[in-house]
Image 1 (cartoon, one colour):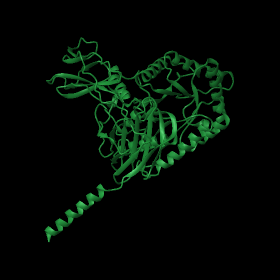
Image 2 (cartoon, one colour):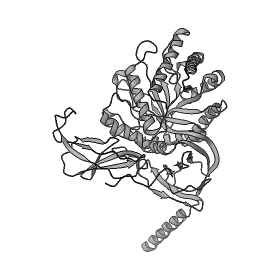
Image 3 (spheres, helix red, strand yellow):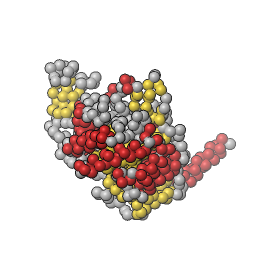
Image 4 (cartoon, helix red, strand yellow):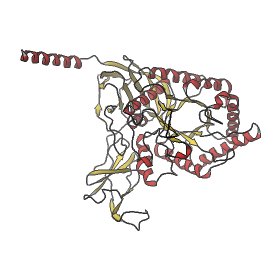
Length: 549
């Protein structure tokens, strides 16, 4: 009797496997019809804090991660000095110029610059002087080479005296806008003004007011939203948010303008902690953090499929903690220097989208037979490469059959973000591809695991960089220019690789990886510096290929 029961269970299991293997693929069609052309890309609100970090931290964390995530778009804050209206903060402006130039040279990142706090001025000459000072700041930055500044927001989220107060005084907002526009036009400064930067969705009605009353001085439209009061697994969020973005996109399009999603993210933590406003996502640092990453991915695909020009997740990295400000900002995909630069789970979801869903590109219409699949497809205008992101919100794995309007020239590399198995690394390397998927009979056939994201891309090459040459290792001690250097620290130097697609270098000691950097120098002063073994340096390109050791 027991043997018979075991046989029945075995047969049942075999039948289940057969039926699972024979499950009808879900058809996804990437159309030749375009949602939009000239899509700029997925990016960040980013401040790199060059005046508050070490050069080593910049090389090994900030610059390394920025280059690997390769954002085509960024929203950056411009700060005034304290005191009277429009006082230049010379040091802050110099740091800002360095940040913008790095973004331009490292990743060809387009910039939307916005003022962190508009200065209150009286109408007339005082406000006109303020507008002139804004033009002075932009002229300074452009003169330093930051020609990647394309847009300027005259205020953050319609704030003047307090957060969002200008939503109740839009004529004043228009007056600032008009005066700044006239200054830019008079000086031939090629920067477009953005309206209205409103947040959240309930304030997006200000976009309609701007379209009706100040379109003549507006070059682009923008707004923000956070998924407050929505759990990361909410199945209605994607469709609802796409509808909101579509409305804004169509409003802008009617004026021959674009729409930018200037800030967005998961639900906000809106409480005080230890007497300080703790500005952070509600689910970061909880078991729901990986799911929050998937929700950020859904918001990204919703905005892309609605036709947004670009989007900026708030934020690339945490702000340095400053309790004196009575606010702690910990929205970054990774933590600040003081907190070890540790990477958060959403880095491995949004990072893939930033790296591969970048422009200039055309966004194609996508249809799917399952409304729990969220799919976005872009075709880069420079090389015709394809990148496709699929988020499966179903409770079951989804076998797919994806048709393209034309056959890509090579197999797709596949990357996976699985909230149940986040591939966290100390250096913040994006996950490696799980393999390649080739087109068969005109379709890409594959399976996306339940509650996960897959990214398929032909934006890669298979050629690794040349081996690193000229590695030298020297001992440096207390007489070194680096104060407090241990006597047995090691300084590594090597010759730069010449590949145009070089991304960064990995350093190994005794076969164990100890660091990454964009520099051609590394000082090993860590606790394992005295262990035996040779040092090795490996070059990594933008496709993730590593040179031979």
